[in-house]
Length: 395
Image 1 (cartoon, helix red, strand yellow):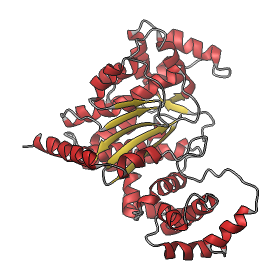
Image 2 (cartoon, one colour):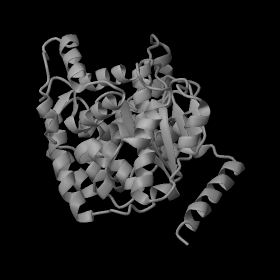
Image 3 (cartoon, rainbow, N blue to C red):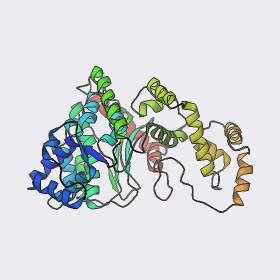
Image 4 (cartoon, rainbow, N blue to C red):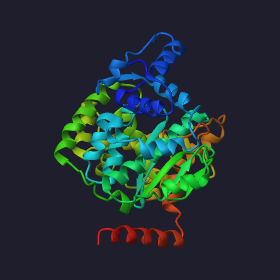
């Protein structure tokens, strides 16, 4: 199991190609990497031509920091617009391109995202309204990482447009950092509202967009590429195991109430049968994982007296308060009210739960939930207009 985070050599080749456009040389960059990172005296440039090879992630970050010295302020957007292709992301790119719809391409891209990028916390959150790619960093972003993040979100739009042959546009885009380029440049590229200084980096696509078919879909190839990706994923190792990914998805979506295994498996880019089989290999059952996540979340929130017992049950996805009370007593041996009274007498502790959270304990899905659940009449009309507009492209 690798002890150093790595990225595909194919991705580094894409970065080096762009660096060459800026007047940098691969030899200079690789040499500086060897001097900066002790223990990695050099990287054989010939190794980068191996499509299966992986190289230290530090090289990825160093290339970005070299490029921003020469690049214009809109470099991340222009990079995605001009240089990104399915080959840039290795097997993950091929797998996404072979998918049948935009939504499934996104789900598979995020499912295997760590094969491409190891930094940042990336999830695909869904609701009946659509889905959002969310990428969050626990610390402030330096300019290089901010620019790479812009490229990361913009690449989804570039590839979606290329693979569908349509002028795909997200509903909205958010960045944690302040704009690096003029705001008009972001709106030109995304053709959507773009917000800065938010809690997370997010790009939201409505349901109609997610259902658009890809021109080059190859269902037979998807099965083979998923096996290749799964093998690479298991060899990669690291803390983000399948079980942890499942728990975080459950935590992020439990307030919606629909935690059916088919839906959750789909968000993970696999069938429910595959998910069940992998859980069984770990001596786990899906409903037991759901129950455990709910229990941990309930205990972490019970001290928040701003939440009524009814509201707490709603957050955990229980249809009725009575069902939540029974479950809580089964978990703790006490009713929620009794547990809360006892909790008042203990020293306060900060609970971070197990969902998508920032360093302050805030739920990273909050902004996404606002987008999905708090739409006013104007928003609903805009969504309906968007559906009609996209539907007209096929008539």
